[in-house]
Image (cartoon, rainbow, N blue to C red):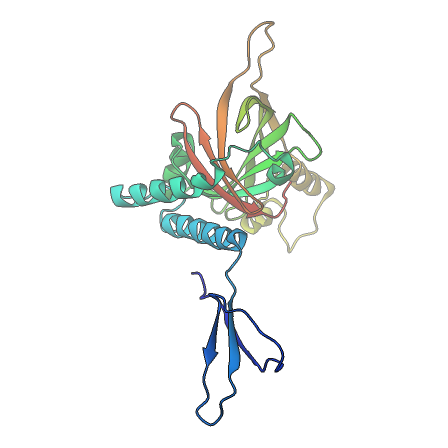
Length: 281
């Protein structure tokens, strides 16, 4: 909300020999006890246009986050909510009408998912809400492109768990890695390379079964625990056939600043709203 512009009023007595021409920004204040007149100058300071734009931009970002906060990252939405979210998205994206090129320095880093309409992500969230043996924790997108000028790598990170067997919400990590290249000022092309399962963190209950705390841990049980923690399964998805392009997709970055990222998967793949997070992996 814009604050009213501050107004400063200054009174001063002009020298007897001085003559000040009148101007639209000044007026004379007569004093009943004297024939001497004092000049009263009123100066109004307006907020710089840049500050107004920054305040308006922050309000639009707040409106978008407020619109998506009760949707469980997009899983539970009503038609009215979807309409409000889309309106907030368009309002925010209007600040990128100058179509500036993608700033890879800003894009680099880790982003936490706040909302999506992408079906491939919503099916995971839906499964987590329906199945008692499957939990989905935080979902991130990690870009690695610092110092680059034409692309880099992006890793889609899904933290998930199986209750009682793995640690809650962060029992394991599903990692989908892709190489990306800039194909236009706001579009990047993702070329998927690998799907990996890693960072297995078993629950204390399962650790107690494998290696009971009341019994001395043998070399074998310690080896089993270490093998579980360091386990990593990788499945390549890139094409090895000459002339055949790997699985990929076009991704339009409709808004980007230091703490918010909005992307749209071209071809009806859905919209994604991210906020800046601490680096992971």
